[in-house]
Image (cartoon, rainbow, N blue to C red; front, side, top):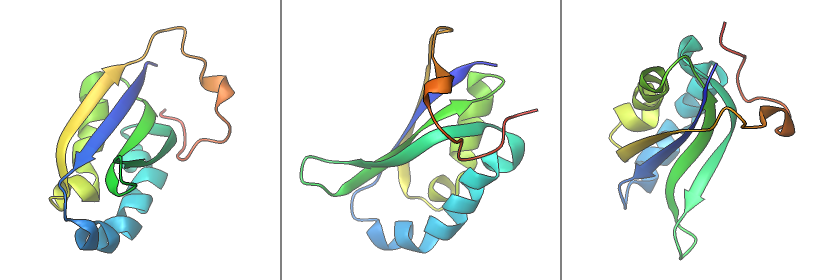
Length: 108
C-alpha cells in the first residue's frame, strides 16, 4: 500500500478552536480516520515564531484520494481550523520500518 506526506495548514488565530477540537483530532488519528488510513507518525507544524501553523502526518492509504478523505474528515478540518490540505505521494523506496510504533493500526 502506498505512503503519503499529508500537510494540513491552519488558519491563523484559530488556537482556541484547535484546543477545543484536539481530543477529537487525537481520536481520529488513533482510529486512522475509522480505517481510511494508517498514521505512521505526525505532529504539529510551527511557523518561524514558534506558533502552531498546522500539522503533518505520514500516512499509509490505498490511494491519494483516501489519504485526502482522511485529512478532510479530521475534526480540525471539519471544524474550520484547516485552510489547506496537501497530499504528496512518497516513493516506493520509502523506508516505513525506520519509523517506530504507528499512531494508528495498519489499513486492512
